[in-house]
Length: 302
Image (cartoon, rainbow, N blue to C red; front, side, top):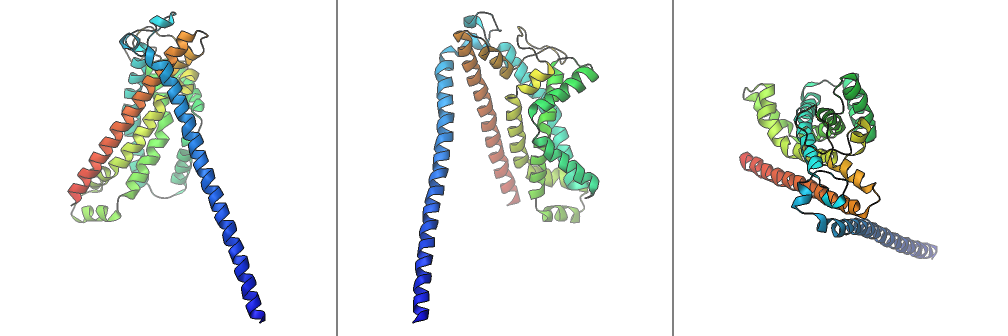
């Protein structure tokens, strides 16, 4: 009799606990959905507001004109040329160094205190605020190396900014390559470098490419490092050399937003639309190239 009563109490308690768990699960699911809706709704509201203000101003004259004191005559040609120049130089500098560092850390270096220190610093640098890189670029490239406030100084500063991200992404991709691939290649007489070049890197390239594109997308929208190192806010010419002064789309947008005239705010919205399109095109190209490379590597393995 006592056992039956205990069992009844236990069943009642278990039922109450399950009911509480269901309520908590429902509340958690509702909170997740609410957070998603609020975040996505805020993003959509901002994008729609920018499109409404920027699309009427977006035309050929806007794309091919230099900045002006008159908002209806101002354009983004200098900023667009500076952004493209920055990205080309940043890619040329950051990708070889970042991928090379990842190869060394994953394939050649031994596990010791020195490599542990390097890995900790890379992880810390990946989370460092971008303005710190601007101060570093100002002190190292502009003043110490006397490169002035030039295109090469800005590109090198952005390269330092995205290097940790590229190294981490490349290391993770190289780490995912099965060890049996390396062992099979070495067993057939290939050297370590041939194994890395012909087998490891091609298999790791799709994931590495994704990290690279994400890093470049971040660099495109950075304003703080360039302003800190002294990039110009008003440039009425295209950069013609590595030592040429420059501006970039984020800086030009920041300059227009700070103006009181409504026309400059519309110009800023149009510049944001162009910047969004550049980022989306870059990411779309990366996704297409990654999928293509994954299919090719899968076909080769078969």
